[in-house]
Structures are given as structure tokens and as C-alpha cells.
Figure 1 (cartoon, rainbow, N blue to C red):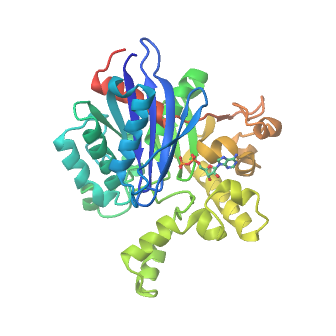
Figure 2 (figure 1 turned 60 degrees about the horizontal axis):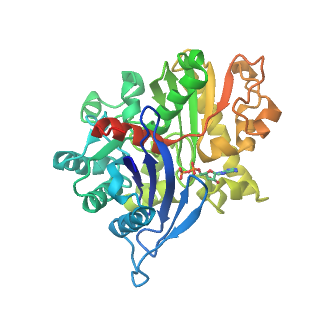
Figure 3 (figure 1 turned 90 degrees about the horizontal axis):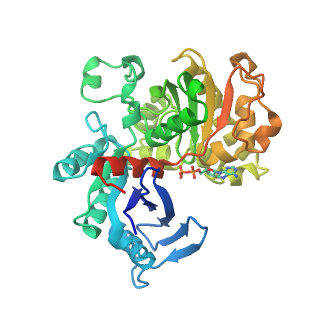
Length: 396
Ligand code: ADP
């Protein structure tokens, strides 16, 4: 068996992974992908091969609490069973925050880990888990190169005005900036668009990454100009459980009038707002779309309304839009959200092909539409695998 690349995406309660075979002269080919949910409690995990065979990952039943290391060991167990373990030539990690200095994918050593630890205050809900995933993988594969790929990296090309807040300059200088996130997804989409529609990809494009986390990004000639997420992954669109854009005065009100402390406010804004908080039902768009609750309808309507605002706003950061791309769970699958988001947008040159949209076609704008609208499934894992191959110098 040739070299295998393992990609890991470690969150607070989940560890997503994928294994790719390296084929000479071609892009890495996915062998399998899987995830472990419920880290911090009694976890469950499953894996699905490229051929569609599903199996469960096994954990020691006496364990009450599965941490990232135990989750990693379960992945290692599966790799062994599948006969891939001795072929793993490099491990690639999705890291949410690279700060000001970590931009290009980087081979992980002690100094990179120290830098990542220093970034924890900038991403307290993500970075510690990314680091836990890295440490677990280093233990499982002690002599295998590990590569960190940063979600903030794609956005480092923002011009100053789209990178700053209107605070005294000293805050910008110390790193209070619009870092932006979902960079690996945006990088994949711009590259894919370059293959599908090379002329369009050289112009101004707005990409809507609509998953549990959701953001949008304006891109010119494949380079990021502006995005809806800011200093943290809380800004911009409302999301599964996050509030999105919020008047900072609300935070002051919560502190001074409601006497909420930082942890309580953090829980409210990150975990109990967005689709979940507004609907009082679920963070899951599928569930809300089938619900007849007025609160579920309001939560979806707010989400859609933010997409429309941001689409128009991002168009103003570039010179209009040549194309719009929808991606991620909601963007790829919810024709209702896309239809509501683009309805009446002819003034922006967007003429929806209603049937194509309902069929989740690759192009969902009408033939005569000046702006082309695409659905392109994202593949952050492939992006990580490619960066890892290059950075670790693995050859097929
Ligand atoms: P994550 O950010 O966790 O990677 P995903 O990109 O998988 O999230 O997106 C998850 C979201 O996509 C959920 O809100 C889910 O309900 C929504 N989704 C997935 N399939 C559909 C569908 N067929 N219709 C509407 N929403 C969908």
C-alpha cells in the first residue's frame, strides 16, 4: 500500500477524521472518513469507506469519559484493522486560529505548539481542542510528521479596512483583528471554481459557507477581500447555536443590568443563540424546516435575512458579484434557504432558476442571469490532505 494521509479536525466534543491514499500525479483519493461524537462523555464513533461501507468504532465499555487521546486510539484501532496504520506517512490537522504569524501550513514542533497555546485566548472554545487533537496524534504516531493547517490563513489577504475594527490603532497592532474563519473551505471552493469556471473565478465572487458554523466571504481572483466572521467565529451570520452579528451594547447590557459574568455571556452567545436559541427547538436546519412552529420560521427568516444583508454588503467590498457559491450542509442541501436568500435579488444581477435550485443542481441561476450562482460541495479534508502532503514532503 502507498502512503496514507490522515486528517484530523478536533472540536470540543467531536473528532472528525479522514484517510487519503496518495496517488502519484493525482489529488489524494479519500479511502474513508468518520467521526467520534460525545468526547468528554461516553462517546460513539463511526467510519464510512469510500465504497459506502459503514462501521462503528469501538471503545472500552468501562470508560465513563472518552477524551481526545482515547478517541485517537479508537481511530488508530480502525486504521490497524483496515491495514493502513503502518502506511500513515503524515497527519494533517485543522487548526482554527493561526493568529498573525501562522499562515502557511506548518510542520508541528514544540515551538508551533507553544505558539498555538499562546493563541488560546483568541479562540478559547476551539484552540485547546485542536491542541489536544495534535498531542493525541503525536502520541499515536510519534515518528510521523504532523502538519497544522489554519482556518484563518485564507483571510490574511484582507485589506486594512476589512481587517480592522474602528478601535484605537493599538488594538489592531496587538492583534484585535478580523481574522475570519472557514478558510480551508473557502480555499477549496475558490480552487474548485477555478476548474469549473476559470474566467468567473478570476473576478469577484461571494461564497456562502452555511453549516452549523456559517460565514460568507468576498473573493477577488481567488484571494479573500472581506468576510463576515471577525475576531472570533461568533460574528456575522446567525448559526446553529451562535448569535452572529450583535450590537456590543447588548453585551454591556447583559453585564451591567443582568449581572451576567463572562462565562454566562459566552454560553449564551456561543451555545444558546442562533437557530437553537431563536427557535427554542433545535440547531438543526432540517428539523426547523419541517417544524410548523412560528419560532422555527422566525429563526430561519432571520438566518436568511442576514445572508441577504451580507451578500449585498460583501458585494460592496469588491466591485459587485460575478458569482455566488453556496456550500456546506445548509448551503448544499437547503433549496428553501437558497431560494429565500436570492428571491428578488435581480437588482444584483441574480436571476434564480427555481427548478435547478430545487434540484440542487451545480448551477442554479438562469442562463440569462448576469450573476452565476453555483452549489459546490466543500471538502476541507482534501484541502488539509493536500497541504499536508506538500508541507511534509510526502511523495506517492
Ligand atoms: P458543520 O459545520 O458541523 O460541518 P455541516 O456543514 O454538516 O455542519 O452542516 C450542518 C447543517 O446542515 C445542519 O443545520 C443541517 O440541518 C443542515 N443540513 C444538512 N442536510 C440538510 C438538508 N437536506 N436540508 C436542510 N438542511 C440540511
